[in-house]
Image (cartoon, rainbow, N blue to C red; front, side, top):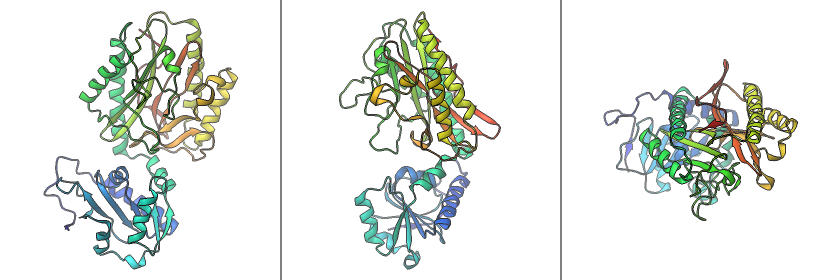
Length: 403
């Protein structure tokens, strides 16, 4: 067992600006103080990364009255960011050898939405005298507000998406398949810095690089909680691009996610080869009207629900409410979602989500209309909400794009 305090001599080629991690720890401690929590336990590797800059298996203990400590099970032979005190362990029971005021710990905060029953039981074995309280909502709300470091990474991911949309406009032609285009764009994205993993808090959902779908495939739903699904190439992953070839006059939806240095940006554009059918143009005009209403209402102080209701009212007024965000029983309930380390972060633009929007919230808004005859037309931008106005992190042209 090795106990190591903050030091810098082995610090690798990472940024030495640690203040983001200090500020995040300070914020969760303020939450703990309000809820009278003596100790917060973070065990999800992604959440550990958020608070420490390290992606490890282990546990982050954040005592209210003492300094945090990261207990690392693995890796043990890889240099880590020395942003806080850490200790290597092989078993959870070894945590008790660390000099904390264990007997003063009466209330313990855990994230029950992502903590399995077996993990909770293991924690209770080493801390049997504590009362456990759920802090999932508080941590998700904390992560909803992005700091400058996070925003910069999301911006860089947005620039990659802009380049990919421009490249797609060059590559799309009659006869190539959805999958061929997806493979080409994903290869380019990774050359530009895309990590290629798209994490979701909802463990029942999975996501891949892109939904590149055309014609009738744009209307195919899947087990993913999203307005589009696609056929995919296997029943083991029945979503995403297939071997269907692009055809003239039909919509080609390209919904891309990029992960730059851990942070995700999400965007959609719709392309058409050749002449755009008049009915598709009309449908797209209605889509853009809904999109405009969404943008107008994404301001600090409005709740996510209020934004969603405005869009739903507009869809009804335009006579497209029955094909908005899906068809039939597979319509999704949200119109937008927060992005960051995960694809499905707070806020959700939907009925019932009453948390107010605030400055430095990053949200992907994705209105989509599904015509049973024509297919899908959709638009999605990732936006940064600021006091000065809405900043689109995707700059590529928004209107229906003719090839």
